[in-house]
Image (cartoon, rainbow, N blue to C red):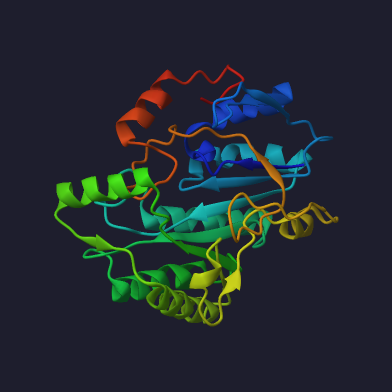
Amino acid sequence: MIVSASYRSDIPAFYGDWFMRRLTEGSCQVTNPYGSKPYTVVLTPEAVDGFVFWTRNLRPFEPHLSRISADHPFMVQYTITGYPRALEPGVIATDQAIADLQRLAVEFGPRCGVWRYDPVVISDLTPPQWHYNNFARIAAALEGSVDEVIISFAHLYAKTERNLKIAARGNGFAWRDPDTAEKQALSAALAKIASQHGITAALCSQESFRGEGVAAAQCIDAARLGDIAGRPITARVRGNRPDCLCHESRDIGAYDTCPQGCAYCYAVRNQAYAKRSLAQHDPNQPLLG
């Protein structure tokens, strides 16, 4: 079993102590997002084939990585977008995040980290040319430290659109959802830039937006985990939405628990609610939230 930790929250940034206690205990509980009772996920070395960590700030979690790697292969999906504060009020500085991924590659190898430029948001603050320049700067810095960048365009769920509109009103900018042809051109342009730095670009769960030179992403990647482990890891493809090619996994996070306040986030209804969730969090409890 592959364990995802977590696309619903940022466990490495905010809940590392909880995770390590759950690893010591050998299990955790997960709140069913559809209202059913919590269920248990076993976290013993015998039960877990590997971990996929998702984060925007790996630094608080770095002291734990050696212990984790002693029993489990792991990979890190690290989002680095470098957006203005109007879109990402609580995210660490881009250069700090880049340095984190560089250190990860030195200690655990370049297959361990995957850069996410996700989602691509088109606005007055971040027009297409801004993305080309910003993406190129990050790609150049990460050359040799990663071999893949996963991109996507914002999924406009109801709460995503609501929060983007609130951020736009409060910060005086406008945003738009590009049409399919523009998204294809944007993804192709980013893929071309990435390739100049030895990085493959892949698009997450949005097949119709894939431009020339863009692969289909597999964020939960059993083959990559197997490369890291030095042994085959097998899992069936079982995506959690249309066009998703991820291998089967169990996610142990919880919605409405990441307080970084990204305006486009699909996992948090608002930053204030998530901050309260973090303040009330008990790292000794089996449930994250």
